[in-house]
Image 1 (cartoon, rainbow over the protein chains, first blue to last red):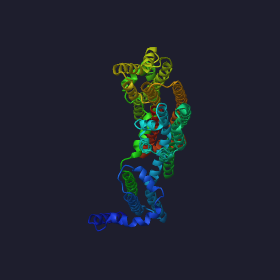
Image 2: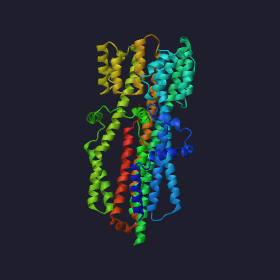
Image 3: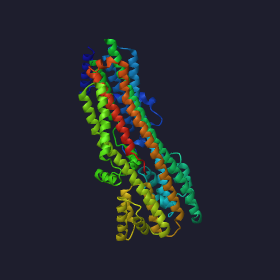
Image 4: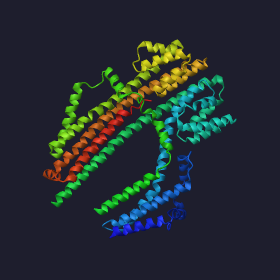
Length: 265
Length: 299
Protein backbone atom coordinates (compact mmCIF):
# COMPACT_ATOMS: atom_id res chain seq x y z
CA UNK A 1 0.00 0.00 0.00
CA UNK A 2 2.76 2.39 1.03
CA UNK A 3 4.61 1.63 -2.18
CA UNK A 4 1.59 2.65 -4.24
CA UNK A 5 1.31 5.85 -2.22
CA UNK A 6 4.99 6.61 -2.77
CA UNK A 7 4.79 5.85 -6.48
CA UNK A 8 1.70 8.03 -6.92
CA UNK A 9 3.30 10.85 -4.93
CA UNK A 10 6.50 10.50 -6.95
CA UNK A 11 4.59 10.63 -10.25
CA UNK A 12 2.55 13.62 -9.08
CA UNK A 13 5.68 15.50 -7.99
CA UNK A 14 7.27 14.73 -11.35
CA UNK A 15 4.18 15.97 -13.26
CA UNK A 16 4.00 19.16 -11.17
CA UNK A 17 7.65 19.88 -11.75
CA UNK A 18 7.42 18.99 -15.45
CA UNK A 19 4.39 21.24 -15.99
CA UNK A 20 6.06 23.97 -13.98
CA UNK A 21 3.06 24.01 -11.64
CA UNK A 22 5.54 23.56 -8.84
CA UNK A 23 8.81 25.42 -9.21
CA UNK A 24 11.45 23.68 -7.10
CA UNK A 25 14.03 26.41 -7.59
CA UNK A 26 11.62 29.13 -6.58
CA UNK A 27 10.57 27.11 -3.56
CA UNK A 28 14.21 26.75 -2.42
CA UNK A 29 14.79 30.47 -3.06
CA UNK A 30 11.81 31.34 -0.89
CA UNK A 31 12.74 29.09 2.00
CA UNK A 32 16.45 30.04 1.98
CA UNK A 33 15.98 33.07 4.32
CA UNK A 34 14.59 30.71 6.98
CA UNK A 35 17.85 28.79 6.90
CA UNK A 36 20.05 31.88 7.09
CA UNK A 37 20.45 31.43 10.84
CA UNK A 38 22.21 28.14 10.13
CA UNK A 39 24.90 29.75 7.98
CA UNK A 40 28.34 29.23 9.46
CA UNK A 41 30.45 32.31 10.24
CA UNK A 42 33.38 31.23 8.10
CA UNK A 43 31.35 29.71 5.27
CA UNK A 44 31.86 32.66 2.90
CA UNK A 45 35.59 32.71 3.64
CA UNK A 46 35.94 28.99 2.95
CA UNK A 47 33.93 29.26 -0.27
CA UNK A 48 36.07 32.18 -1.44
CA UNK A 49 39.21 30.18 -0.77
CA UNK A 50 37.90 27.04 -2.41
CA UNK A 51 36.67 28.70 -5.61
CA UNK A 52 39.15 31.57 -5.72
CA UNK A 53 39.64 31.59 -9.50
CA UNK A 54 36.17 30.46 -10.45
CA UNK A 55 33.09 32.47 -11.04
CA UNK A 56 30.67 31.03 -8.51
CA UNK A 57 27.50 32.33 -7.00
CA UNK A 58 27.64 31.99 -3.18
CA UNK A 59 23.85 32.21 -2.94
CA UNK A 60 23.44 29.40 -5.47
CA UNK A 61 25.82 27.15 -3.55
CA UNK A 62 23.95 27.79 -0.34
CA UNK A 63 20.61 27.10 -2.02
CA UNK A 64 22.04 23.85 -3.31
CA UNK A 65 22.84 22.81 0.27
CA UNK A 66 19.26 23.53 1.31
CA UNK A 67 17.86 21.74 -1.76
CA UNK A 68 19.89 18.61 -1.02
CA UNK A 69 18.85 18.71 2.60
CA UNK A 70 15.15 19.02 1.72
CA UNK A 71 15.36 16.23 -0.87
CA UNK A 72 17.12 13.88 1.54
CA UNK A 73 14.48 14.67 4.16
CA UNK A 74 11.68 13.78 1.73
CA UNK A 75 13.44 10.59 0.66
CA UNK A 76 13.92 9.76 4.33
CA UNK A 77 10.19 10.20 4.92
CA UNK A 78 9.41 7.83 2.06
CA UNK A 79 11.83 5.29 3.49
CA UNK A 80 10.16 5.58 6.91
CA UNK A 81 6.81 4.88 5.27
CA UNK A 82 8.20 1.62 3.96
CA UNK A 83 9.63 0.46 7.25
CA UNK A 84 7.65 -2.34 8.90
CA UNK A 85 7.73 -0.52 12.26
CA UNK A 86 6.85 3.17 12.23
CA UNK A 87 8.20 5.20 15.13
CA UNK A 88 8.47 8.94 15.73
CA UNK A 89 12.13 8.38 16.53
CA UNK A 90 12.66 7.67 12.83
CA UNK A 91 11.37 11.12 11.95
CA UNK A 92 13.85 12.61 14.41
CA UNK A 93 16.54 10.53 12.71
CA UNK A 94 15.35 11.86 9.37
CA UNK A 95 15.81 15.42 10.66
CA UNK A 96 19.31 14.50 11.81
CA UNK A 97 20.04 13.06 8.38
CA UNK A 98 18.75 16.19 6.63
CA UNK A 99 20.86 18.35 8.95
CA UNK A 100 23.91 16.22 8.17
CA UNK A 101 23.29 16.58 4.42
CA UNK A 102 23.03 20.33 4.94
CA UNK A 103 26.24 20.44 6.97
CA UNK A 104 28.25 18.04 4.83
CA UNK A 105 29.56 20.59 2.24
CA UNK A 106 30.70 22.84 5.08
CA UNK A 107 32.41 19.97 6.90
CA UNK A 108 34.13 19.08 3.65
CA UNK A 109 35.25 22.66 3.04
CA UNK A 110 36.57 22.86 6.57
CA UNK A 111 38.56 19.64 6.23
CA UNK A 112 39.94 20.79 2.87
CA UNK A 113 41.04 24.03 4.50
CA UNK A 114 42.80 22.07 7.24
CA UNK A 115 44.58 19.98 4.63
CA UNK A 116 45.49 23.12 2.75
CA UNK A 117 47.05 24.65 5.87
CA UNK A 118 48.88 21.42 6.61
CA UNK A 119 50.27 21.39 3.10
CA UNK A 120 51.49 24.99 3.43
CA UNK A 121 53.05 24.10 6.76
CA UNK A 122 54.91 21.23 5.12
CA UNK A 123 56.04 23.14 2.03
CA UNK A 124 57.03 26.48 3.56
CA UNK A 125 60.43 25.33 4.92
CA UNK A 126 61.30 23.83 1.52
CA UNK A 127 60.41 27.04 -0.25
CA UNK A 128 62.37 29.10 2.30
CA UNK A 129 65.41 26.87 1.74
CA UNK A 130 65.35 27.65 -1.97
CA UNK A 131 64.85 31.34 -1.19
CA UNK A 132 67.75 31.33 1.27
CA UNK A 133 70.05 30.05 -1.48
CA UNK A 134 68.93 32.84 -3.79
CA UNK A 135 69.42 35.42 -1.02
CA UNK A 136 73.09 34.44 -0.84
CA UNK A 137 73.73 36.16 -4.17
CA UNK A 138 70.78 38.49 -4.64
CA UNK A 139 68.91 41.08 -2.59
CA UNK A 140 65.74 39.86 -0.87
CA UNK A 141 63.29 41.49 -3.36
CA UNK A 142 65.23 40.08 -6.33
CA UNK A 143 65.43 36.67 -4.67
CA UNK A 144 61.67 36.72 -4.03
CA UNK A 145 61.03 37.58 -7.64
CA UNK A 146 63.42 34.92 -8.93
CA UNK A 147 61.90 32.29 -6.66
CA UNK A 148 58.40 32.56 -8.17
CA UNK A 149 58.93 30.08 -11.00
CA UNK A 150 60.52 27.41 -8.84
CA UNK A 151 58.26 27.93 -5.79
CA UNK A 152 55.53 25.40 -5.01
CA UNK A 153 52.35 26.43 -6.86
CA UNK A 154 50.54 27.21 -3.65
CA UNK A 155 52.87 30.15 -2.87
CA UNK A 156 53.03 31.67 -6.33
CA UNK A 157 49.99 33.89 -5.97
CA UNK A 158 51.22 35.32 -2.67
CA UNK A 159 54.69 35.82 -4.09
CA UNK A 160 53.38 37.73 -7.08
CA UNK A 161 51.54 40.02 -4.67
CA UNK A 162 54.54 40.64 -2.39
CA UNK A 163 56.83 41.31 -5.36
CA UNK A 164 54.28 43.70 -6.89
CA UNK A 165 53.99 45.62 -3.62
CA UNK A 166 57.77 45.88 -3.21
CA UNK A 167 58.15 46.93 -6.85
CA UNK A 168 55.52 49.60 -6.28
CA UNK A 169 57.86 51.13 -3.71
CA UNK A 170 56.54 49.70 -0.46
CA UNK A 171 59.70 49.19 1.57
CA UNK A 172 57.89 48.65 4.87
CA UNK A 173 57.32 45.32 6.59
CA UNK A 174 53.67 45.29 5.42
CA UNK A 175 54.09 43.21 2.21
CA UNK A 176 55.91 40.54 4.26
CA UNK A 177 53.20 40.58 6.94
CA UNK A 178 50.52 40.30 4.24
CA UNK A 179 52.27 37.25 2.81
CA UNK A 180 52.44 35.65 6.25
CA UNK A 181 48.75 36.37 6.76
CA UNK A 182 47.89 34.81 3.44
CA UNK A 183 49.66 31.63 4.53
CA UNK A 184 48.77 31.53 8.21
CA UNK A 185 50.91 28.65 9.45
CA UNK A 186 53.07 28.26 12.54
CA UNK A 187 56.34 29.78 11.34
CA UNK A 188 55.32 32.02 8.46
CA UNK A 189 55.09 35.25 10.46
CA UNK A 190 58.43 34.70 12.25
CA UNK A 191 60.23 33.79 9.05
CA UNK A 192 58.79 36.69 7.07
CA UNK A 193 59.88 39.12 9.78
CA UNK A 194 63.36 37.63 9.61
CA UNK A 195 63.35 37.96 5.85
CA UNK A 196 62.37 41.60 6.13
CA UNK A 197 65.24 42.21 8.56
CA UNK A 198 67.53 40.47 6.10
CA UNK A 199 66.39 42.86 3.40
CA UNK A 200 67.34 45.81 5.62
CA UNK A 201 70.83 44.62 6.59
CA UNK A 202 73.94 46.11 5.04
CA UNK A 203 75.96 43.99 2.60
CA UNK A 204 78.85 43.60 5.11
CA UNK A 205 76.70 41.92 7.71
CA UNK A 206 74.56 40.13 5.20
CA UNK A 207 76.62 36.96 5.04
CA UNK A 208 76.32 36.38 8.80
CA UNK A 209 72.59 37.05 8.71
CA UNK A 210 72.10 34.73 5.76
CA UNK A 211 73.96 31.95 7.58
CA UNK A 212 71.79 32.41 10.66
CA UNK A 213 68.68 32.41 8.46
CA UNK A 214 69.94 29.29 6.72
CA UNK A 215 70.37 27.43 10.00
CA UNK A 216 66.86 28.37 11.08
CA UNK A 217 65.37 27.21 7.79
CA UNK A 218 67.30 23.94 8.06
CA UNK A 219 65.85 23.35 11.51
CA UNK A 220 62.36 24.09 10.20
CA UNK A 221 62.89 21.78 7.26
CA UNK A 222 64.02 19.02 9.56
CA UNK A 223 60.97 19.52 11.75
CA UNK A 224 58.66 19.42 8.72
CA UNK A 225 60.37 16.24 7.54
CA UNK A 226 59.99 14.55 10.93
CA UNK A 227 56.33 15.51 10.94
CA UNK A 228 55.90 14.14 7.44
CA UNK A 229 57.46 10.83 8.41
CA UNK A 230 55.35 10.68 11.54
CA UNK A 231 52.25 11.31 9.43
CA UNK A 232 53.16 8.40 7.19
CA UNK A 233 53.60 6.10 10.17
CA UNK A 234 50.27 7.33 11.51
CA UNK A 235 48.67 6.58 8.17
CA UNK A 236 50.04 3.05 8.27
CA UNK A 237 48.66 2.71 11.79
CA UNK A 238 45.31 3.97 10.54
CA UNK A 239 45.37 1.36 7.79
CA UNK A 240 46.02 -1.31 10.45
CA UNK A 241 43.07 -0.07 12.49
CA UNK A 242 40.77 0.03 9.46
CA UNK A 243 41.78 -3.54 8.66
CA UNK A 244 41.10 -4.59 12.25
CA UNK A 245 37.68 -2.92 12.34
CA UNK A 246 36.61 -4.16 8.91
CA UNK A 247 37.73 -7.77 9.31
CA UNK A 248 36.94 -7.88 13.03
CA UNK A 249 33.51 -6.33 12.41
CA UNK A 250 32.87 -8.79 9.61
CA UNK A 251 33.81 -11.70 11.85
CA UNK A 252 31.50 -10.40 14.57
CA UNK A 253 28.72 -10.15 11.98
CA UNK A 254 29.41 -13.71 10.90
CA UNK A 255 29.31 -14.86 14.51
CA UNK A 256 26.04 -13.02 15.09
CA UNK A 257 24.42 -14.50 11.99
CA UNK A 258 25.64 -17.96 12.97
CA UNK A 259 24.08 -17.55 16.40
CA UNK A 260 20.79 -16.48 14.82
CA UNK A 261 20.99 -19.58 12.69
CA UNK A 262 21.61 -21.74 15.76
CA UNK A 263 18.59 -20.22 17.51
CA UNK A 264 16.42 -20.97 14.48
CA UNK A 265 17.33 -24.67 14.44
CA UNK B 1 12.72 -7.51 1.44
CA UNK B 2 11.09 -4.70 -0.58
CA UNK B 3 11.58 -2.36 2.38
CA UNK B 4 15.27 -3.18 2.49
CA UNK B 5 15.59 -2.50 -1.24
CA UNK B 6 13.86 0.86 -0.82
CA UNK B 7 16.09 1.76 2.12
CA UNK B 8 19.12 0.87 0.03
CA UNK B 9 17.83 2.96 -2.87
CA UNK B 10 17.31 5.84 -0.45
CA UNK B 11 20.86 5.56 0.87
CA UNK B 12 22.25 5.39 -2.67
CA UNK B 13 20.17 8.41 -3.71
CA UNK B 14 21.51 10.43 -0.78
CA UNK B 15 25.03 9.37 -1.63
CA UNK B 16 24.53 10.48 -5.25
CA UNK B 17 23.23 13.86 -4.10
CA UNK B 18 26.21 14.36 -1.84
CA UNK B 19 28.62 13.20 -4.49
CA UNK B 20 27.15 15.38 -7.22
CA UNK B 21 27.31 18.32 -4.89
CA UNK B 22 31.09 18.17 -5.12
CA UNK B 23 31.38 19.59 -8.61
CA UNK B 24 33.61 22.33 -9.94
CA UNK B 25 37.32 22.47 -10.37
CA UNK B 26 39.08 21.18 -7.28
CA UNK B 27 41.80 23.69 -6.59
CA UNK B 28 42.91 21.89 -3.46
CA UNK B 29 43.32 18.61 -5.30
CA UNK B 30 45.86 20.23 -7.56
CA UNK B 31 47.66 21.68 -4.59
CA UNK B 32 47.69 18.37 -2.77
CA UNK B 33 49.22 16.76 -5.81
CA UNK B 34 51.87 19.47 -5.66
CA UNK B 35 52.77 18.53 -2.11
CA UNK B 36 52.83 14.84 -2.89
CA UNK B 37 55.11 15.21 -5.88
CA UNK B 38 57.95 13.81 -3.80
CA UNK B 39 56.28 10.42 -3.48
CA UNK B 40 57.20 8.88 -6.80
CA UNK B 41 60.58 9.76 -8.22
CA UNK B 42 60.98 6.82 -10.53
CA UNK B 43 57.97 7.17 -12.80
CA UNK B 44 60.23 7.75 -15.80
CA UNK B 45 61.75 4.27 -15.54
CA UNK B 46 60.15 1.18 -17.03
CA UNK B 47 59.66 -1.89 -14.91
CA UNK B 48 61.96 -3.79 -17.25
CA UNK B 49 64.75 -1.30 -16.60
CA UNK B 50 64.09 -1.36 -12.86
CA UNK B 51 64.18 -5.16 -12.76
CA UNK B 52 67.43 -5.21 -14.72
CA UNK B 53 69.04 -2.83 -12.24
CA UNK B 54 67.80 -4.82 -9.25
CA UNK B 55 69.31 -7.90 -10.87
CA UNK B 56 72.61 -6.07 -11.29
CA UNK B 57 72.51 -5.15 -7.63
CA UNK B 58 71.95 -8.80 -6.78
CA UNK B 59 68.71 -8.09 -4.95
CA UNK B 60 66.37 -9.90 -7.33
CA UNK B 61 64.53 -13.06 -6.33
CA UNK B 62 66.19 -16.27 -7.49
CA UNK B 63 64.32 -19.41 -8.50
CA UNK B 64 64.70 -20.71 -4.95
CA UNK B 65 63.04 -17.61 -3.51
CA UNK B 66 60.16 -17.89 -5.96
CA UNK B 67 59.70 -21.56 -5.14
CA UNK B 68 59.63 -20.81 -1.40
CA UNK B 69 57.06 -18.06 -2.03
CA UNK B 70 54.91 -20.32 -4.20
CA UNK B 71 54.95 -23.02 -1.54
CA UNK B 72 54.25 -20.55 1.26
CA UNK B 73 51.54 -18.54 -0.46
CA UNK B 74 49.92 -21.47 -2.22
CA UNK B 75 50.13 -23.67 0.86
CA UNK B 76 48.76 -21.06 3.25
CA UNK B 77 45.96 -19.93 0.93
CA UNK B 78 45.08 -23.47 -0.10
CA UNK B 79 45.11 -24.65 3.52
CA UNK B 80 42.94 -21.76 4.56
CA UNK B 81 40.58 -22.33 1.63
CA UNK B 82 40.13 -25.94 2.62
CA UNK B 83 39.87 -25.45 6.36
CA UNK B 84 37.36 -22.61 6.03
CA UNK B 85 35.19 -24.08 3.28
CA UNK B 86 35.95 -27.82 3.35
CA UNK B 87 36.20 -27.81 -0.43
CA UNK B 88 39.18 -28.87 -2.53
CA UNK B 89 37.98 -26.65 -5.40
CA UNK B 90 37.96 -23.56 -3.19
CA UNK B 91 41.36 -24.52 -1.79
CA UNK B 92 42.84 -24.81 -5.29
CA UNK B 93 41.29 -21.53 -6.44
CA UNK B 94 42.57 -19.75 -3.33
CA UNK B 95 46.05 -21.20 -3.82
CA UNK B 96 46.14 -20.15 -7.47
CA UNK B 97 44.95 -16.62 -6.70
CA UNK B 98 47.55 -16.26 -3.94
CA UNK B 99 50.32 -17.45 -6.28
CA UNK B 100 49.11 -15.02 -8.95
CA UNK B 101 49.87 -12.16 -6.54
CA UNK B 102 53.55 -13.06 -6.22
CA UNK B 103 54.64 -11.12 -9.35
CA UNK B 104 52.72 -8.05 -8.13
CA UNK B 105 54.43 -8.19 -4.74
CA UNK B 106 57.77 -8.59 -6.47
CA UNK B 107 56.94 -5.57 -8.65
CA UNK B 108 56.25 -3.47 -5.55
CA UNK B 109 59.43 -4.67 -3.86
CA UNK B 110 61.55 -3.87 -6.93
CA UNK B 111 60.08 -0.40 -7.17
CA UNK B 112 60.90 0.28 -3.54
CA UNK B 113 64.44 -1.04 -3.83
CA UNK B 114 65.01 0.99 -6.97
CA UNK B 115 63.70 4.18 -5.35
CA UNK B 116 65.98 3.62 -2.38
CA UNK B 117 68.90 2.95 -4.71
CA UNK B 118 68.25 6.14 -6.72
CA UNK B 119 68.01 8.17 -3.52
CA UNK B 120 71.35 6.79 -2.32
CA UNK B 121 72.91 7.59 -5.67
CA UNK B 122 71.55 11.12 -5.66
CA UNK B 123 72.84 11.80 -2.17
CA UNK B 124 76.24 10.38 -3.17
CA UNK B 125 76.20 12.67 -6.19
CA UNK B 126 75.36 15.82 -4.21
CA UNK B 127 77.77 15.13 -1.34
CA UNK B 128 80.65 14.31 -3.67
CA UNK B 129 80.06 17.28 -5.94
CA UNK B 130 80.20 19.60 -2.92
CA UNK B 131 83.39 17.94 -1.65
CA UNK B 132 85.01 18.08 -5.05
CA UNK B 133 84.07 21.70 -5.57
CA UNK B 134 85.96 22.71 -2.41
CA UNK B 135 89.20 21.76 -4.20
CA UNK B 136 88.45 22.27 -7.91
CA UNK B 137 86.29 25.44 -7.55
CA UNK B 138 84.61 24.51 -10.82
CA UNK B 139 81.28 22.77 -11.19
CA UNK B 140 82.12 20.98 -14.44
CA UNK B 141 85.46 19.83 -13.03
CA UNK B 142 83.60 18.51 -9.98
CA UNK B 143 81.24 16.64 -12.28
CA UNK B 144 84.20 15.08 -14.04
CA UNK B 145 85.87 14.24 -10.76
CA UNK B 146 82.76 12.51 -9.44
CA UNK B 147 82.18 10.72 -12.74
CA UNK B 148 85.71 9.38 -12.86
CA UNK B 149 85.92 8.47 -9.17
CA UNK B 150 83.59 5.51 -9.71
CA UNK B 151 81.39 6.29 -6.71
CA UNK B 152 78.33 6.49 -8.93
CA UNK B 153 76.47 3.74 -10.64
CA UNK B 154 74.16 3.73 -13.65
CA UNK B 155 71.68 5.30 -14.43
CA UNK B 156 72.94 8.30 -12.40
CA UNK B 157 76.51 7.85 -13.66
CA UNK B 158 75.54 7.98 -17.33
CA UNK B 159 73.34 11.01 -16.62
CA UNK B 160 76.33 12.79 -15.08
CA UNK B 161 78.25 12.01 -18.28
CA UNK B 162 75.44 13.59 -20.30
CA UNK B 163 75.66 16.64 -18.03
CA UNK B 164 79.40 16.97 -18.68
CA UNK B 165 78.89 16.65 -22.44
CA UNK B 166 76.08 19.20 -22.41
CA UNK B 167 78.23 21.64 -20.40
CA UNK B 168 81.09 21.42 -22.91
CA UNK B 169 78.74 21.60 -25.87
CA UNK B 170 76.86 24.68 -24.65
CA UNK B 171 79.59 26.48 -22.77
CA UNK B 172 77.18 26.94 -19.84
CA UNK B 173 75.90 24.64 -17.13
CA UNK B 174 72.22 25.65 -17.39
CA UNK B 175 71.12 22.88 -19.69
CA UNK B 176 73.14 20.26 -17.79
CA UNK B 177 71.40 21.26 -14.57
CA UNK B 178 67.97 21.23 -16.20
CA UNK B 179 68.63 17.78 -17.63
CA UNK B 180 69.58 16.27 -14.28
CA UNK B 181 66.87 18.06 -12.33
CA UNK B 182 64.16 16.82 -14.66
CA UNK B 183 65.30 13.24 -14.14
CA UNK B 184 65.94 13.51 -10.40
CA UNK B 185 63.36 15.78 -8.85
CA UNK B 186 64.85 16.00 -5.37
CA UNK B 187 65.03 19.11 -3.21
CA UNK B 188 68.71 18.54 -2.44
CA UNK B 189 69.53 18.41 -6.17
CA UNK B 190 67.44 21.50 -6.90
CA UNK B 191 69.01 23.51 -4.08
CA UNK B 192 72.56 22.44 -4.82
CA UNK B 193 72.19 23.17 -8.52
CA UNK B 194 70.71 26.58 -7.77
CA UNK B 195 73.69 27.42 -5.58
CA UNK B 196 76.20 26.27 -8.20
CA UNK B 197 74.35 28.16 -10.89
CA UNK B 198 74.65 31.31 -8.83
CA UNK B 199 78.31 30.69 -8.04
CA UNK B 200 79.07 30.07 -11.71
CA UNK B 201 76.97 32.92 -13.12
CA UNK B 202 77.35 35.57 -10.43
CA UNK B 203 80.90 34.65 -9.45
CA UNK B 204 82.88 36.18 -6.54
CA UNK B 205 81.97 35.55 -2.92
CA UNK B 206 83.36 32.81 -0.71
CA UNK B 207 80.76 30.08 -0.84
CA UNK B 208 82.55 27.55 1.37
CA UNK B 209 80.21 28.17 4.32
CA UNK B 210 77.12 27.90 2.16
CA UNK B 211 78.36 24.62 0.77
CA UNK B 212 79.21 23.41 4.24
CA UNK B 213 75.66 24.24 5.36
CA UNK B 214 74.27 22.43 2.36
CA UNK B 215 76.38 19.42 3.15
CA UNK B 216 75.02 19.41 6.71
CA UNK B 217 71.47 19.65 5.35
CA UNK B 218 72.07 16.61 3.16
CA UNK B 219 73.53 14.70 6.13
CA UNK B 220 70.47 15.57 8.17
CA UNK B 221 68.16 14.44 5.38
CA UNK B 222 70.00 11.15 4.88
CA UNK B 223 69.95 10.43 8.61
CA UNK B 224 66.19 11.10 8.77
CA UNK B 225 65.48 8.99 5.69
CA UNK B 226 67.45 6.02 7.02
CA UNK B 227 65.89 6.26 10.46
CA UNK B 228 62.46 6.48 8.90
CA UNK B 229 63.24 3.48 6.71
CA UNK B 230 63.97 1.36 9.79
CA UNK B 231 60.82 2.62 11.54
CA UNK B 232 58.66 1.86 8.54
CA UNK B 233 60.18 -1.58 8.00
CA UNK B 234 59.46 -2.47 11.64
CA UNK B 235 55.95 -1.15 11.38
CA UNK B 236 55.39 -3.02 8.14
CA UNK B 237 56.45 -6.30 9.74
CA UNK B 238 53.96 -5.72 12.56
CA UNK B 239 51.27 -4.82 10.04
CA UNK B 240 51.79 -8.03 8.09
CA UNK B 241 51.81 -10.16 11.24
CA UNK B 242 48.62 -8.50 12.38
CA UNK B 243 46.91 -8.95 9.00
CA UNK B 244 47.82 -12.62 8.87
CA UNK B 245 46.56 -13.08 12.41
CA UNK B 246 43.22 -11.61 11.37
CA UNK B 247 42.72 -14.48 8.93
CA UNK B 248 42.80 -16.69 11.99
CA UNK B 249 39.69 -15.04 13.42
CA UNK B 250 37.51 -17.17 11.16
CA UNK B 251 39.25 -20.23 12.59
CA UNK B 252 38.24 -18.96 16.04
CA UNK B 253 34.61 -18.88 14.93
CA UNK B 254 34.99 -22.48 13.81
CA UNK B 255 36.23 -23.37 17.26
CA UNK B 256 33.32 -21.58 18.88
CA UNK B 257 30.64 -23.01 16.61
CA UNK B 258 32.16 -26.44 16.12
CA UNK B 259 29.71 -28.64 14.13
CA UNK B 260 27.32 -25.76 13.44
CA UNK B 261 30.05 -24.15 11.30
CA UNK B 262 29.72 -26.88 8.70
CA UNK B 263 25.97 -26.41 8.70
CA UNK B 264 26.21 -22.68 8.11
CA UNK B 265 28.55 -23.38 5.19
CA UNK B 266 25.55 -24.89 3.42
CA UNK B 267 23.87 -21.48 3.34
CA UNK B 268 25.09 -19.60 0.26
CA UNK B 269 25.12 -16.12 1.79
CA UNK B 270 27.07 -17.32 4.82
CA UNK B 271 29.65 -18.80 2.52
CA UNK B 272 29.72 -15.58 0.55
CA UNK B 273 30.25 -13.64 3.77
CA UNK B 274 33.27 -15.76 4.69
CA UNK B 275 34.69 -15.28 1.18
CA UNK B 276 34.11 -11.55 1.53
CA UNK B 277 35.95 -11.48 4.85
CA UNK B 278 38.96 -13.23 3.32
CA UNK B 279 38.93 -10.96 0.26
CA UNK B 280 38.57 -7.84 2.41
CA UNK B 281 41.45 -8.77 4.66
CA UNK B 282 43.59 -9.58 1.64
CA UNK B 283 42.72 -6.23 0.10
CA UNK B 284 43.79 -4.37 3.23
CA UNK B 285 47.01 -6.35 3.40
CA UNK B 286 47.83 -5.61 -0.23
CA UNK B 287 46.88 -1.97 0.14
CA UNK B 288 49.13 -1.57 3.20
CA UNK B 289 51.92 -3.35 1.39
CA UNK B 290 51.53 -1.08 -1.62
CA UNK B 291 51.66 2.02 0.59
CA UNK B 292 54.79 0.78 2.33
CA UNK B 293 56.60 0.00 -0.91
CA UNK B 294 55.52 3.04 -2.89
CA UNK B 295 56.04 5.80 -0.40
CA UNK B 296 59.74 5.70 0.41
CA UNK B 297 59.76 9.33 1.51
CA UNK B 298 62.92 10.48 -0.22
CA UNK B 299 62.83 14.17 -1.06
